[in-house]
Amino acid sequence: MSTNKLAKVFHADLWGLRERKYEYLFGNDAQTTQWLELKPAAPYYFFVPKDFALIAEYENF
Image (cartoon, rainbow, N blue to C red; front, side, top):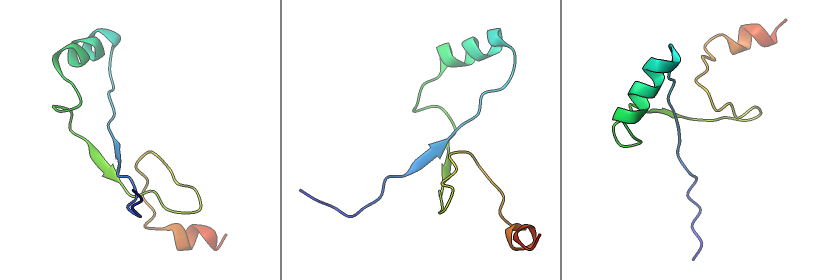
């Protein structure tokens, strides 16, 4: 069975002190985490959120 669908990529950050992170992780899981869907693009395929609004200007330098 072959399909040409690509996988979806999601990202979530967890910042703070270790105790707060453990508290969050013990009380949540993949279903309750607020995920951000990413759209990785060539040529870099970043797996973190990136803002490419000024990429054309950046590439001129």
